[in-house]
Length: 231
Image (cartoon, rainbow, N blue to C red; front, top):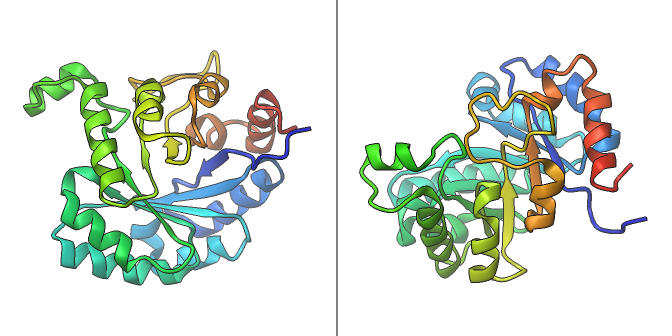
């Protein structure tokens, strides 16, 4: 039996706090943490985040902050008091912004940086104006986040090998958009199955719709956990 923490975090992407708490309660035995994002935070504010954190599982607050350093520092300072374990910012906000976020974080709160969204591929990057592909830009931003003192990054599973090689084994890697074999890929363009992403070096796997939209979310979460050896 493995002794490492269960890497599966379920995304509570709903505006309704009762629905989120019920879902969290159903999957709780099978996951290592929970994620709340912009939809939930926009609808429920700090009290909603506190309610999820009160369940006792680690909470990743996926708010993707991106603003001037002073503003981001103030936001991180406020959010760190809500009982969450991880908060993210955009690496493209630059070194000064990332350092300000890290300095403002409370004790025990990790600050990680979003590299390139998993809904973007090389064609999207070209349209945006980046001369390099998604994976190369993700690697560049991961290095920048590490130099800026952050704890890790959010990245696509397809970018893991290069980021691991460049940033080392202690740099936290959080991978959204994993899709179990046979499931609908929906808006994800750069993804792997949970077991493949874990094998590639993912520390945390964010599972949203494959679990939350399942007829039985608890069974879906349990199946992913079993696939990863956390039955």
